[in-house]
Length: 91
Image (tube, rainbow, N blue to C red; front, side):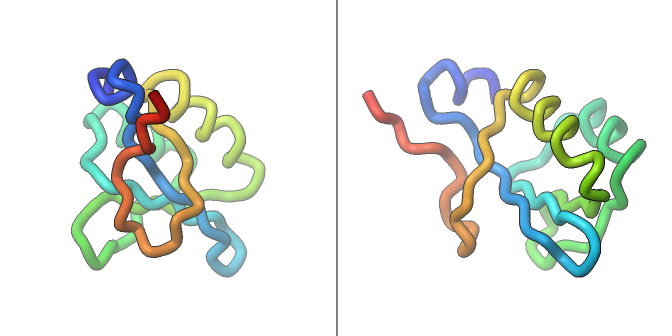
């Protein structure tokens, strides 16, 4: 994840409103320590592609997104089809 960030193409994650929670969907595996942190405030849900998906309350969304940006160098995407796994390199 750090290497992708340094290359200017951070890995992506997606957030969608799902019923009364926000669903975070990741396109690559997360480090175990990051998974443990998310499990403190979110519920791990079954994903059809086998990659991490978590449901969390609205009040936890901002702090967890800050964690993903600051500690894992991930970038949120609005791409609903989930095909993009890296942010485009704008250099």
